[in-house]
Amino acid sequence: MKDDPLIALAELAADVLDDVCPATMTALGDNPAASMRPVVEAVLAEASAERWVQKQLKETGLKAMDFRNGMAMEIEPAREMVAHWVGAARAMLGDAPNYSETPIEMEVKVAEAPERFAFTLQRVGKLTPHQARQKAEEATADVLRIVSDWCVEANDVGGVNAGDLAWRLEEAGHPLSAEVAS
Image 1 (tube, rainbow, N blue to C red):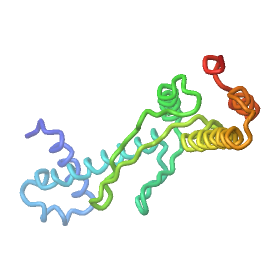
Image 2: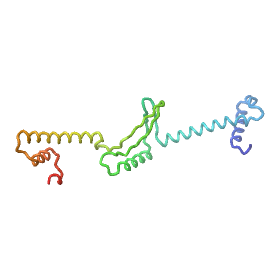
Image 3: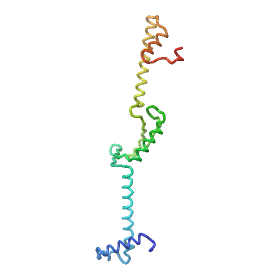
Image 4: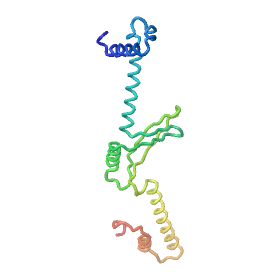
């Protein structure tokens, strides 16, 4: 039992307790070290957990975390964490000009109601997927308007040909590709 480091600490704790408050020694019984061992073990476990938490807080820069109405974290971007973010962003974006379609998914279970979320990584100042879709829809609507007007004119007035349509599309910023134009 002497090889047990906790017993050695428990004996030390019992000696200190005897020096500070000798009356408590009678409550510990015939083997004060054995009675103090669970106390010493609990104190060391708590100290170890607190030390680990403080180390994690220091290394991650986590300042606050809130789980009301979703999840919010306030962090001080630790240098290493930022380096990981930059590396991940570069790897995911690769040669993409504006955003990555690589899904990052996680399942969050709050109050027994799991939800799935996906995040899109975007280069700052570039088009988002939503903006790109809107731009494409506007261009499509513009082309359809030009073609529709040309069809009406070709049917009602006449005297227009495919070259006129190609010219109108080019003037509006929608030139036909070289293969189609020839």
